[in-house]
Image (cartoon, rainbow, N blue to C red; front, side, top):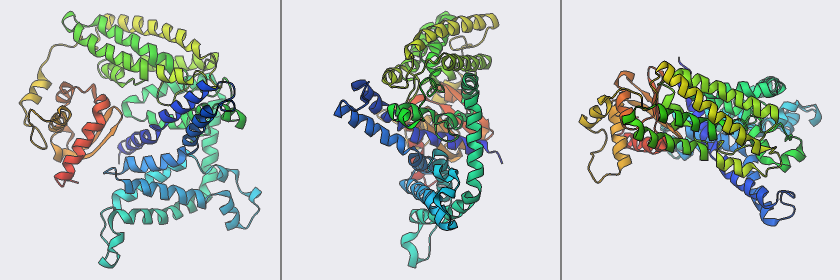
Length: 503
């Protein structure tokens, strides 16, 4: 059994609760801007904003349980999210120190400290995964007519609560061991200091093609291994007062991304434009400059990264190395900033008055250096080894002609239909039709598909429809990078499968 599709689903579902972080970042950032010295003590509005943003961070484990359960459910139904909530509440209550002390009839202070940390993102993810699995398996079960009210989706929260009793019993014995292992891993990485941050940055980019970078991020950014870098940074003054925010340290698993996302990839985009064929330069410039602006402003890097990931994989390896170097430099120099969404200009400005932001402005000259490095190095390598980066590919009409000649999948296509709906029909056709799609999901910029026959998925046709890249993690899975349109395409495909009565 290939575990990769399962891990990818977890990675994709993690983006649902993570999507809450920009709201927390905006609220906290605005609060610190209004009252940069008192952190709410000198201004009621600042206190209001900081407390509102803080409550989102305080409940991240709960949001993870709900979001992962919803994201991994086959039809994205609210009943799965409810089951995730139920599962999390059961586990955190049964494994709470007070409950453990009562069960064992021992003083509270004799309970393992591990149970004092049971309310964390790892348990939230675990609850969400189990709840989603139960939903996918039992949400269509029909009980005897005397119990018909509890059939189907209503049955899932009940089963979840029972199942989580068993999970809690296992955690009763194994959670202290697992917790110590996770904390030990976190301490080992933290103990490496700046080199540890650099190693994380390298593997973060290297895992982009598989989608497993989300799972890696959860270890460093959240409270899975005791690091919890993003919530601790966004917590600002409160984190400092609680001893979990350390000036010059907290944020080091975020800061080094700013020079790469705001500047380095812009340099790469410029290199692609200047090395493109003359007849392709205008088209390449329009695409690359728009993608470069997006990564500079918001930190959304996929439009640039997937433009060369498959065309020149060695360049992507260099990109991963440069990312690691950037995180190492920022951490070693203690140039610190953080983000709630990604390392773009918006988050840099919002975090600039956070009490944990240290000489954040130095990330700008570091970024300008990386812009020059990316542009010079990429341009040299592209020309020296004749790499087929965007704009340098040989002319071809294969994909688009195939799409134009094919009949649309799903409901009929007409000139007055929504262009995005028409695109979704063509995507379905390029993937072998709706009947070839086993599962459909989306993760911000990627359409994640499991198919019956991978040979029916036409990569060229998908790229002709605007996909930046097509990733084949296994013979029966595909990730199609469509940018911000991915989730809308997935919604159309899921709706058509439901209308067609296909599982």
